[in-house]
Image 1 (cartoon, rainbow, N blue to C red):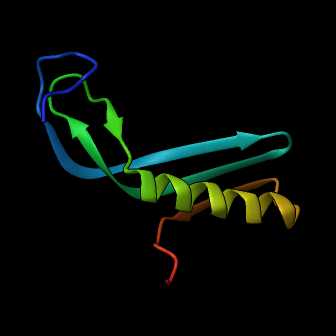
Image 2 (cartoon, helix red, strand yellow):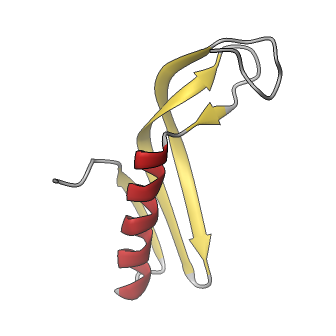
Length: 77
């Protein structure tokens, strides 16, 4: 697929780091599966992964975590 940002590069599978912050909580997820543009480096996370990350972030915020760095792993279905 062509990159919708730069319109020149091709998006290929890879991994990225995603940082989420809300109020007093900051979470860093490493090795998140994503599409990455080979020209501009823009990353694209699938909707299911994004939904999973937001759920994990909500759990962390609810438990009082302020800062956490973790390797992304899909949650069991």
